[in-house]
Structures are given as structure tokens and as C-alpha cells.
Image (tube, each protein chain N blue to C red):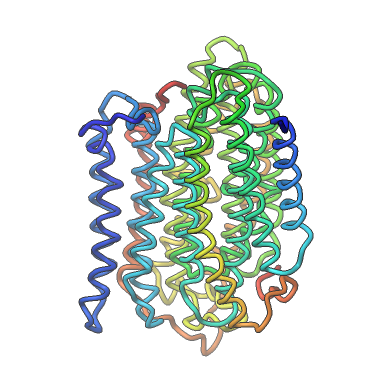
Length: 495
Length: 104
């Protein structure tokens, strides 16, 4: 029997705000029949900002379980939820600039994005595998629909189909893993599983749960859907998948590993597994990105590579009996949260750049070709400078948020005794330099091809682009406040 | 009385069949049905463990979870079938091999 109080509902204020936003947008879509629909993106951004504020207001609260232990309110969930809301804010602005020229501005787009964000915010606070499953599905089902939103040409339906099949498949793996954990322990709550301990059945369940989540975070070899889906989805949706889905999936992965499977025998089992995944993902993502002419595909592989760096942080959280294990774990979680925030700002900006420069008609063979960026330094100096800043951050060159994130992650790996992993990570990021800097070189060195069509500028997209570049630069120069916020958010209830 | 192990084995076989179907079949609808099979295999496992737990008394948790899974699977089917219809409308086929616009 679940007993809950008013305080539990108050803890869910951000999710309630986002759900209310989804309902408001569906209703206004029906009753306001005007041609001008710019208000929809602004409303979505406003609700995202309100939810962000609600998370910020919770940040000082002591951690506690809510809804009979199904969910928690703690610093970790608050930080990850705030990152998701920031991603939603950027998505709404990119969506405003993207959908209007394509005459596709409708309430359901923003309502679905808000509902997906509700799923993500619930996911990061889930403390019970059943709760996590339902939140995971709320996020995923909304995203499947978003990917197929633009019904022009063959790309969106194909991308949505691939995402749907692999998403549903990974959810099924996760669910069967949950069933095995339930069988082994009689519980589905993370703390209950941790208390019951032991057994091969539980290990099998952990393996299936890990495989399911590896699909969601796009870790090699579970990444095959990523380039196709990222390319076929509308650019704002791709941005949202790259930032929101990834942040939420990483947060829940860390929570499950630390809260339910944090004990020594389990950590000894999953740590080598995650190290192998991290190495495969870092090198796979970076090597596959090298040959891409399509910037959108390149960014998809770049997001795979970044999942690898984040997996390094997750592998470093394992409690493996070394002295000062708790301090190392705190350091690793700090690095992970900082990197998630830095990656969200950088990637949202990179996709805003893509949305600003891509061809209007998605049915052309390559609307996101590298040639699209040629000569931009002359034609759109500010946008080009912002894009260059974001590429430097993705590549991990100081002073940028991406550099500090990688530094924190690799330092945590060294302190956790995973020196080879850190060295491999540095080598993988050096490979990444080539394709990130190629975009900058094309923008600044190559002349624009004659008769190149100029994309109509749109202020929300340009604003996102310049604002994220400025944020990334500021975090790179003064990482103190964000590091402090991430360090304050490392306490996992029951972890 | 059928032993609980039998139910678990049936669940595992259903799960393996679904896994095989997703990986080996080329028809979108068959793949979709295979995913549903995997969800139902998980449900059967939940119910068996709820009725015959390995430790502790039988609980209603597993039964409640099964209802959650049924509801979630229905929502997933609604969106998934819509996506498959969208694929059919743009291509006239639901064979996965025809989905090759997006590739390296």
C-alpha cells in the first residue's frame, strides 16, 4: 500500500508544471485557430524555464524518498532534471525557427516534447525498477512520435521505425531483466534489491538491464540506430534526443548501478563491462565520425563518442575496495554531472547551428552536407564564430565547457585506478579533433560555392546558437559555480 | 500441479523466440509482434515469481506490475502501429530491407 503526503506531490512540482504545459498546448492548438503560432514555442520555453526554476528551488532540500519509495527527491535528480529542462528550453527555441519555414508549427509537437521531458524528469528520480520502466516508456513513446513528426518524404517514417523497433526491443530487455531481479529478490525497489543481495539470477537481470540502457545511451555495440535516427529526425528533435534522452538515461543508469548494484561483488562484475563499453564507444564513435560528409551524421557519431566519455565516468564510480572509494565516487559523479551539463549546452548549440544552416527541403539528398558550411565566416560571421566555439567545446579544447568536463572525467578515472582507460580516452578525443576542426576549417578557409542558397535567418535559432556558445565559453573560463553545483548534487539516496 | 519452473521456462522460451524474431525477421509487423512476445514473456515471469517467490511470502506486487506492463504495451502498440502505417504509406511495403534511405 502506498501512502503519500502533500509534500510528495510538492516534490513533483517540475513534472506537474511540464504536464500542465503539455495540456495547455494541446488545448490552445484546438481553440486558437489563427495562423500565427509563434506563441507555442514561447509557451513551451516558459514552461521549461518554470520547471527549471522548480528544480532549482528544490536543490537545497535534504534527500528523501517520495511516494512510498517509488521515487526520490535528491540533489542528483534535481541536477539531472534541471539539465533536461534546459535541453527542452533550447529545443523549443530551435523548434520555433525550424518548424515555421516548413509550415509545420503545431501544438502537438511541443506537447509531445513536454511529455517526453516529463518522462525524463521522472526517470532521473526513479527509485524502483517498475517506476523507471514506466518513465522510460513515457519518454520513449513520446520520442518515437516526435521523430516521425514531419511527414515529408521517406526519411522521418524510416527513422521513427528504426527508433521504435530498437527502443521497444531495449525496453523489453530492461523489463525482462527487471522480472529476473524481482524473482531473485522479491523486490523491484533499488534499495530492496541492494538489501537482498547475491545470486546468479540477479546478475543475469543486471546484464539485461544494462543492455537495455546501453541502447538508450547509444553505447557501441548498441549504437546502430543512432546515425540513421539522428539524421532522419527533424533537427530540433535530434537535439532533444541527443541532450535530454541521453542525460536522463545516464542518470538512471548511474542510479541503478550505485543504489541497487553498488555492493562489492556486483561492482566487480559491472565495472570491467562498462570499461569495455566505454573504450568501444569512444573509439567506435570517433572513428565512424571521421568519414562523414553529412554534418548531421557526424554529430550523431559525435554523440556516440561522448556517451563513451560519460561511460568512463560511470565505470569510475564502482566501489572496488580501494581506499578513499567514497571520495573517488563523488569525484566521478561530479565529473559525470558536469559533463552532462556541458554536453547539453554544447550539443544543443551544435544542432541549433545545423538547423540554422540546413536546406529547407528535407527531401534533397544531403541537406546537411559539409559544403553547407563553406564561407559562412564571411556571410554570417557571428553564427560562424559561435559554431566554431561549439566545435572546439565538442573537441575538448580549452577554454570551453567540453574541456573541463573531459578533464574532470579523466581525472576521476585516474583516481579510481583506471589509468589505461583515461589514456585511451585522451587518444580517442585526439582522433575527434580532426572532424570537429574540419567544420571550422570549412567555415573559415573555403569560399562559399557560387549561387549557394542562403538559409533565411530566424532569431530563436540564432539566439540559441549564440547563447549556448557564450555559456560554453563562460563555463570554460570559470567552471567554479557549475562544478560546485555538480559536487553538491552527488549524494544518491541509498547509494 | 505444474511446477513454477515450468512457467519460468516457458517465459524464457517466449523471450528467446521474441529475441530471435526481432533479430532475424524482415517484416515490420513480425518484428513488432516479436517485441510484444518479449514483453509478455516478462509478464509471465513476473506472475510466476509473484505466485511462487524464491524467498518470502507470495505478494501482489508481481500481479500489479503485469497490469502496468499491459497498459504500457498498449500505448507502445498505438504509436508503433501508427509508425508502421506511416512507413507503408510512403513506401508501399513494410519489409525492413526497403528501409535504406538513411545509411552511410
